Amino acid sequence: MTITLTQPYEDLTFMTPLSEERAERLVKFLAEGLHGTVLDVGCGWGELLLRVVAAAPDARGIGIDIDEASLEHGRHVAVTRGLADRLDLVCGDGKVQAPERADAVVCIGASQIWGPPVEDNRPVDYTAALAAIRTMVPRGARVIYGEGIWSRPPTAEAVAPLAGRVDEFVPLADLVDLAVAQGFMPVAVHEAGLDEWDEFESGFSARYATWLAEHGTEHPDAAEVRAQSARQRTGYFSGYRGIMGMAYLALLAV
Image 1 (cartoon, one colour):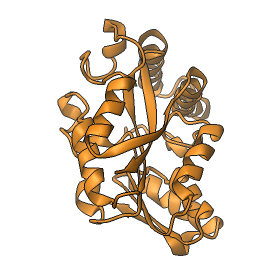
Image 2 (tube, helix red, strand yellow):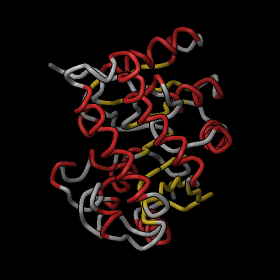
Image 3 (cartoon, one colour):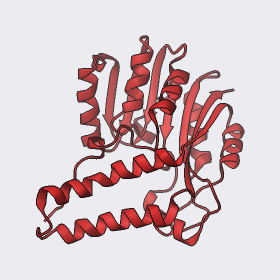
Image 4 (cartoon, helix red, strand yellow):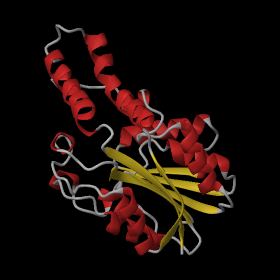
């Protein structure tokens, strides 16, 4: 039997460790003076993109993701907020589906679009992602680039539930240097705090509790759901909590 868990958007506002306060700052940065198209590559259900479009009345949003269920939820939200006529959510490969030019870009946790497949367990190719984004935008364009980093030197326990390698991510300072090398200058550099991570991991894991509460512990699939929950919980709390970070770079193309 296929185990059907609730979608992440049922328990999360953003598919990334991101507080309302930090999101507001990112939206303000992107929306300031924005006229034209804002592209969100790997947008999920597009919550941040929706907020940018709402804050920039002359802008149009394009979001691209491979998860049709998330995109359909985003389309529904766009209708309820009166933004559907200025938003396109496209299911597909961001590397192929993205327009050649955009006036602003959001890319959070989606560098793999331009790098090796996730299943290859290779280091994040920040350079390929940043270089691709730079070709899309004119000088002066605003970009939010968010990606995983090492907040502290990785341990064996931290890398085990991830790609299993200490070179999967780079420290924050190295990421900023990579962005500069690819034609950007940082306006602001943020890193998600532990409270943001705890809220994100809790929201992502809540679907296991919901499933067990709905189906009961005697259900034939209950043991597998418990095992999935335990792996997620152990990987975070006994593994990468406080070691794997999430950086948010507010960048200007130069």
